[in-house]
Image 1 (cartoon, chains in turn yellow, green):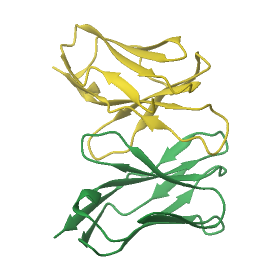
Image 2 (image 1 turned 45 degrees about the vertical axis):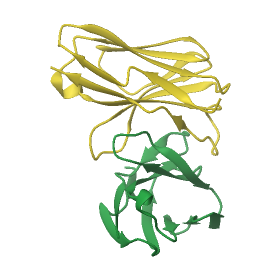
Image 3 (image 1 turned 135 degrees about the vertical axis):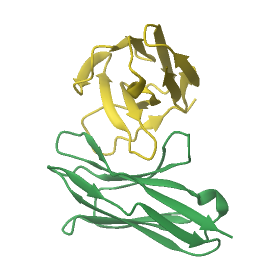
Image 4 (image 1 turned 120 degrees about the vertical axis):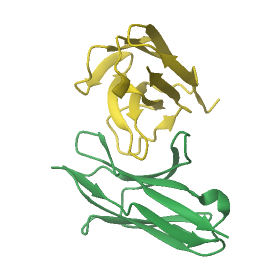
Length: 115
Length: 109
């Protein structure tokens, strides 16, 4: 299995809703990432988990809450989002962190629209 | 600050060759990556360079000059399916990926 699976593919939510994005990989990777991508822009790093511990939080607002239940799963809990949070949310995994040839494998993304 | 520059958009003809350039200024260097991203899809890995020189992989090649802070991605025998954005990313001294804004490549018949 060489894939990163993200669900749902599309999500529409109101500003008062609570929802979650899910990500799963079975490649034995020990680093997992959440990125946010707006149209025609590069991915922006949000969070990095290394060996199931949060190692990087790029000053992301608390309305985004990551969770890594085990080495294969990564969730992003969403609450009280703003319309400007509408974007493509990409999950990625890599064998580990801390070395150069650390290729990220991306999931297909979850397209989020906040009304 | 850290900066990666690549052209915003390029146009090429099916069957031709195109070179997409990337220049970078980063805090340290632990390798340069090229990713391809079709509209609305996830980025997919194309190449990794950490030493100077050319890496060839089928129709795609990537070149790196660390002294010049410069890389290019060379695509040969262009096909319509190569229409996509091409993202250059550099891994800095903290092993963080710094992304360029991407180059949108349009292939015309």
